[in-house]
Length: 166
Image 1 (tube, one colour):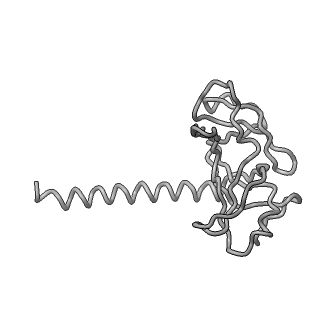
Image 2 (cartoon, rainbow, N blue to C red; image 1 turned 30 degrees about the vertical axis):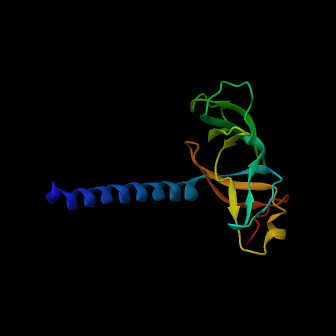
Image 3 (cartoon, rainbow, N blue to C red; image 1 turned 180 degrees about the vertical axis):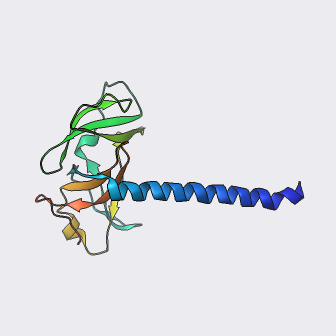
């Protein structure tokens, strides 16, 4: 068994690196080809003593519907207006049906004993220390969303749809 130890460790390391690289490539593809969608934010506290300055993102469309089917994951179907702002239409378990002009965003519901939260992407945004006043003006979270509903947070936007922090 000892003579197989190093090849087994090496094989597992190669598998782990391959999985990691595939994941990174998938996210890069979403960043490059995904559609920019703006999600309205609810106000939250932008400070953490242990982590530095950040904003916890609470998306307006990410409020779980009580009394729904109880799915802990699925798709939030949204429509996009002329300013790229998303408006929730419905939640559904599967990727279809999908009507013309609708976009899918994958979600997962976390049910903590003190609150239920619906996660649709990055729920926090870290920024340089001392920039709190600039990012406190954020009204929208900008996400790139691919055709299968995967999303990546790309920045925060103000009420005039301008990217903050640039």
